[in-house]
Amino acid sequence: MSRAPEQVQDPLRWCAVLALAFWLGCLPYLTAVPHLYFDEVHYLPAARELLMLGEFTNREHPLVGKELIALGIALFGDNPVGWRLLPTLFGALALFAAMRALWFGTLSRFAALAYGLLLATGFHLFIHARIAMLDIFYLAFLSVAAWQFAAAIRQPEEGRWRLVLAGMALGLAMGAKWNALAVAMLPGLGFLAARALAGRRRLFFSRRGAPVPGITLVEAALWLGAVPLAVYAASFAPGFFFRVHPISEGLVFHHQFMLSQQEQVLKAHPYQSTWEQWVLNARSIWYLYEPVAGVQRGIMLIGNPLTMLLGLPALAWCAWHGVLRRHWTALAVALVYAVSLGFWIVASKPVQFYYHYALPSMALLAALALVCDALWQNGWRKSALAPLLGSVLVFGWFYPIISGAPLVGPDSFAVWTWLESWR
Image 1 (cartoon, rainbow, N blue to C red):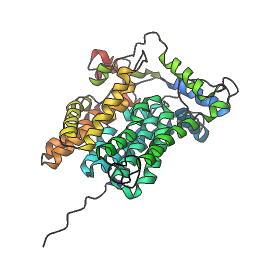
Image 2 (image 1 turned 90 degrees about the vertical axis):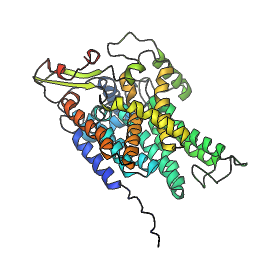
Image 3 (image 1 turned 120 degrees about the horizontal axis):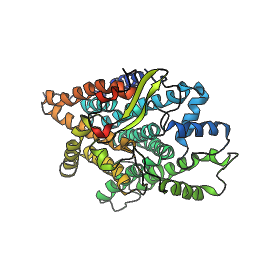
Image 4 (image 1 turned 90 degrees about the horizontal axis):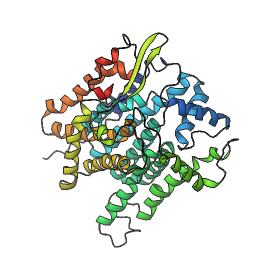
């Protein structure tokens, strides 16, 4: 008598535990810098004005991220806790949602948890979850959108409400930062491609076939196209009520102004870099390096030196298996990386920075998790675990210089600046 195939247990609780551990790990030294640092000097004043509906400043960026920073100030006070606690929660949300997305994409416990470990120790998410910038918010909302879209494909009986949530999250991601724009189009385009490849005669109104049976292409366009745009537009509502420089000529004109601000030629910046340097992890940004109340502290943004490089051949593996083996999750990961990086290759923004690589780095680490999972499933257990252990160890070594922990003295940076371009 044959046995029923064993059902893979959902690692939901382990995903939650890992996200909670990450959040707790974000708290030490969170308020050690009592003043604004790095780009907090732009976004916190804008959030304060938003609370009072005073002057509309930092108008080149959309509002969701600053609305959430303002919410943190309203809840916890205009102090380091109020500035930075909400970003830590969104960092934990980004981690949890990203793991859930890979779980629904693969139904592999190992892939989901390996991704969580790589992402938690990959530097980008950790650093941006501890500073009042816009990046952690758009990363979190994109992760939620990926989670809900993957879950809709895996559980089509829940497809409608999950696509609605995915659309709302996509709108909020775009409303947090324009970095999300190119990737936000992928779920809708993916739905269209899947239906077109299925060869249905009633392309727009057929409810049959991938990616979500029961949902027509017209309905998918509503949830993944119209809803994101409506949510994005609604996020600008406070902009009409500022006392100084409100949105007075409509959203179209305001977006023309935003675009002109983004494309203006700025003078060279000592921390600017190019996409080739991002890929090779060859250029750092010092978010902080100064004595704080008599104690030397530093926060250097780079990617995990081990996994940022190991992830590159993993991306090639994903592209190969995605196209030739029809490993759709691997193909999706490779596409997210290519589109999110390609956005900056073709963008007309003249001065670019390594923090723009935060989203591509998340896709890169997903690719590495998929390769580790393939090794694990094929019995190469030690090879699968080695990158995970290595990532944790490298994170531990760099922790003092990415967390703002106390350092010995002003020359301490030399311990971690392995490359001259990291100095």
